Length: 272
Ligand code: KIV
Image 1 (cartoon, rainbow, N blue to C red):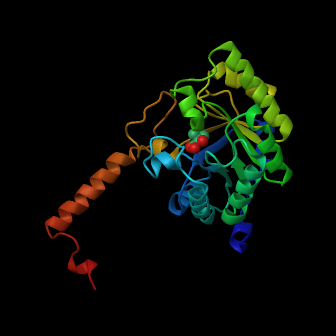
Image 2: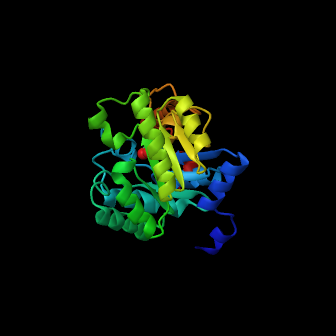
Image 3: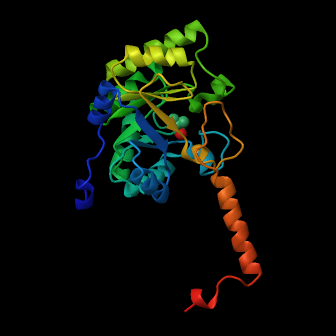
């Protein structure tokens, strides 16, 4: 850790747990590169998620499935270099942890060693129990992810709200309890009914972070490109846009193009 980093009180899993216990909500956003991570960290974000949503917003894929472990590590390295205070969690990409706990451990260790991140996130409950146990046994903090798990999109068939039926809600409650019992430090709940998310947050001692899971959880996460209004077409009900960067960036680029064409840029004052 650099001297500069030591000047700042860094966020740890222990602090996130304390935040839940004293009722302070946890803020979390995705980040995939150095510049954005520096801005978000300096603005006071608690947790940065190097999400596999990079597959969508950075690489332009339709789903999160194509992104590779090497690509996730590249994004994570860039984010870690921009962070002084936030806790950095990295999504383990599709195919790097399901079905083989030895491979899961190898993938998690690569992420931690090569990026300098502080923890990993995995999608799923009982079906990935062995992978989670193995990763935790190496001392790597694990964040769970239940509800709408985008790596399983071809099983679900749609991105609609999950766990509306009693059987799926019951399975989610059991999975959440299992993740806590295994030793996960937090869980993301994506796109589930608010009342169910509230039950999970009340039942569990670890922090529950929601995206499309209502207000009664311990923290909120959004994809940064969505909340800044860089993406335009994605408009789920749960998304609040805090800026319209798409318009601001479009205007700026149009002005630049015009200035270049009109020979208004650069002026003599902007030259050497
Ligand atoms: O990859 C991602 O951005 C995520 C969030 C939606 C929680 O997993």
